[in-house]
Length: 129
Image 1 (cartoon, rainbow, N blue to C red):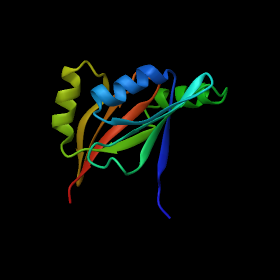
Image 2: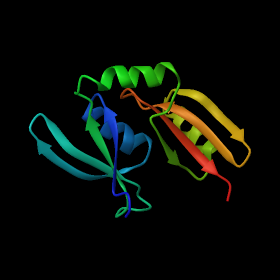
Image 3: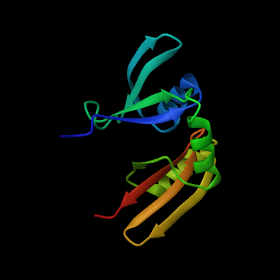
Image 4: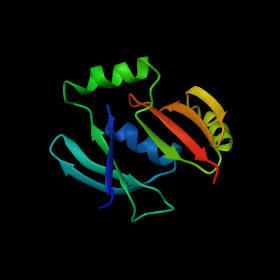
């Protein structure tokens, strides 16, 4: 068994696609119209046949209170691995990304938390190997 899809709930799929590709650096994999929404996935350019991230519309009534509670408590919805948290932090800040947590070294792990502009906090992390 392996993970082939993971989702992030976004309030605007087009805005999310721009952020996740132009800012975070993912690559669009699927973009299929499905009524009012789209089956929209992105992948890492380093692993184009790997796990896909679904940019899932957040239209269900339970989603907004859930996302609002996570953001209010500063809890990231998910985490992405990077090679250098501090370099990514500087790169993304230069693009205007708002961080709720600057890079923090926690022993073998360094993390930072950013606002994805679509209602989520996202952690970036590097674990020393």
